[in-house]
Length: 82
Image (tube, rainbow, N blue to C red; front, top):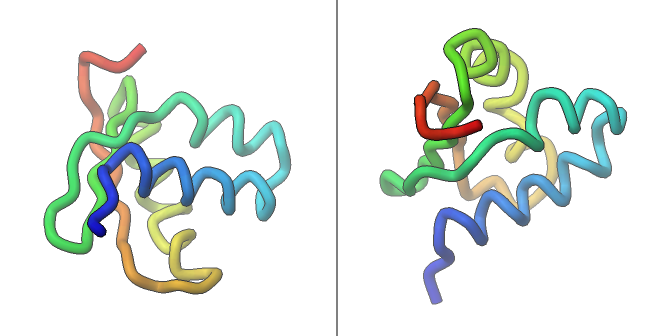
């Protein structure tokens, strides 16, 4: 069974919440939205370019810090996310 982008992101956020300080999680990861899966890469949208760059530099590897290492993340700025 293949997971939807929302299901994948939800699982990753659950793990990230356990690994990161609550304020960090709420500031940088909570206000994001899964956009699509491109093969094994989850593309995540943010409300601005700064947040996308910040998340790309700091949290792209987050899914690989705990098993299973099956997905990568890319963070992109999108105007539709608030």
